[in-house]
Length: 242
Image (cartoon, rainbow, N blue to C red; front, side, top):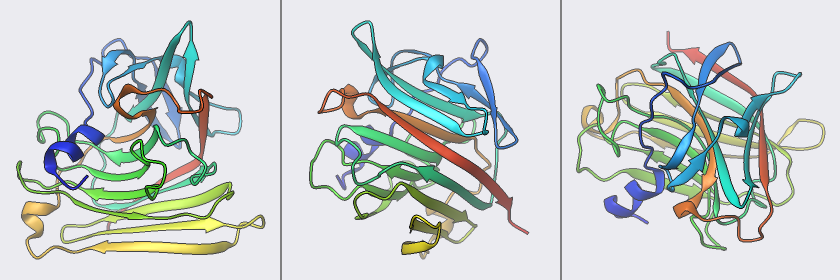
């Protein structure tokens, strides 16, 4: 899991032609919806039907079967966002997510910024195919190709339906925080990770990038229980650094 080669495989996102992509609007931003076959990460098949915004303004992503094929969902912001705080409120039981399913909230470099396995800042809910792996993943990818990513994981409590996740991206650090909420919306448990490397110019990007949300099958696998998956992002906010 810690090797660059394996880690790059886990979060690799291949580029796609957005010229004909369907769009949606969520949280005040326009997003392109990914569509195509055998594309990364995974690889998976992607369809515009797997991402939509409901009447309450919430973003839904699906990983489900249609005509014998499993289809994943991903959206990419049209705008590039830079230093600041990125926050979502997530609806779903992270602990109960299938071991073959990955939810990602992250920025990702465009071709002019850098190649895959660089610049990216991730929050991912994933067990990478392993039943007992901690499902809350934070990852910062280096600016320079070939350097090792920075990665840590946390456990989450079973059965919680709502949680808040944020990362604050600055020139010298990335501060992550996740909060599990009780039925009243109060914070019941909080974890955090402050990534502050000694050589931030090599380790933390300074280039604005699109923000992504996706739901997909690790290594192109279907859920181990064969059941479709849907997640809801109640809200997304970006607060630029002052």
